[in-house]
Image (cartoon, rainbow, N blue to C red):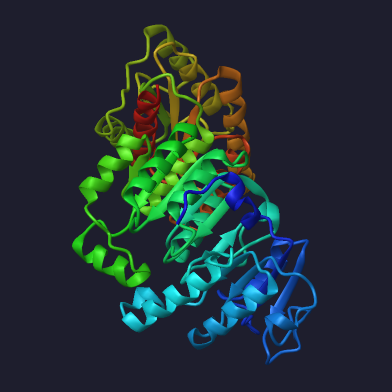
Length: 476
């Protein structure tokens, strides 16, 4: 595959027309027509299925060649036995990009299937057609009205995600969306026989709509090209990489999943570090790190001011901050005195962590926000780590709903961050009640609206902060 550039791939993300060949007549994970319609695609959308006359309210065609208009982008959902004839139709039709949702190629480990993959890809690419896949979900590009599954956000954002796995791409998009992430380009590229990680990294490095790049990679075919592409991308913007197939068992699974040879984790790790990217170990960490890069400015240093209720949890929060290599300095005497002026003495601490019960009484949230403001103004604090929980929701008998309280807290935290100029990192612990979950989701969404990051635990937040600080130091 030749090394790409922005111009070489940009048209792939902006088709004027899309044909879904083998379009499903039922809603579900493979219903590309429904997903693209839901996303608001403004070009021509052509379902192709000889067994239907209409799908999702659109005229359905018996074959690709029967479509009267031009087709830029073809999504193949046809059985394996007809992919060669579809490839010929694509060539004849002047298609620019083919995405093979169709699976059963080289990832099966069978030589006949691998040979079929080689023939089809060679036929298409030799005719100037780019290929996504096979064995993948394809594209999710909100700004262009493209989606590979229903119920994803329709508004675009600055995060790109490149993934060999369609399921992991969808998981990343869904779980990060409730915490505010929105996406520029998401590509599930499967076996990566043509378009794959290196060319996509080069593209994202130049893409003005992308400011953070997240990657899930099982194996790399061309190590030298990958190193050049990753270095270029990481020099331009933060790149976070999750490696699949890190263990022997995972390597076997990767090989049967996308036909990838996972390779040595030590070598991969060294390559990622050398190129200036950040490697993480779990999908949750990939989301957390993308959240940190998206919502946190450059941190002045590692010194945390911890604020929250619950003495035992504050102790554990301090342990997690220390274990991550972050600092938690004692607040200056004058700052402690300001806090004592309105903080109940019994069962609280104002040294750092600030363990306080204010904010739970009849005065509402103002005392808690005032506490955070005072800590934020301390000269030896670089950022605030605020932890809370909404599991109390089921116990509340009267007053504002838990969702209203969560929204008010998020808005107030955003105002304090803007007033003081100190970043606020929010932790909303996993709730234990249905109402608590509603409050937590509202809190996550509203703090994102306020431009703040949220995490499910202090441990997750501390790890993301440590990696962010290390990346900052490396990027100098």
